[in-house]
Image (tube, rainbow, N blue to C red; front, side, top):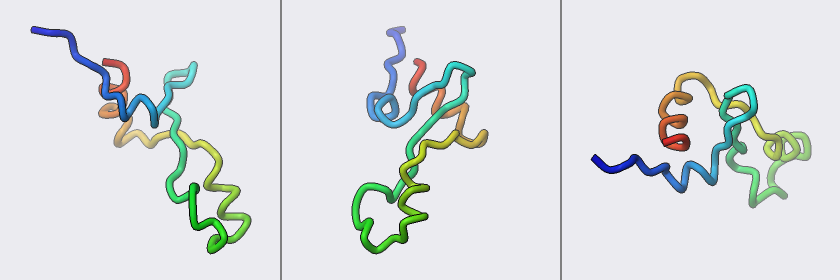
Length: 64
């Protein structure tokens, strides 16, 4: 059976931290920022840790 390939789209969107958690950027932070208030747009530019419900699935995609 051939080797499993990592999902290239997932590799561009998710990164594994040194402690093993999965980090990703928040959605809705790239355009139409004039409609969103300053506090919200600042918060959208911060990276966050992926929740545990999807962590196993994403880890399989990026570390294959």
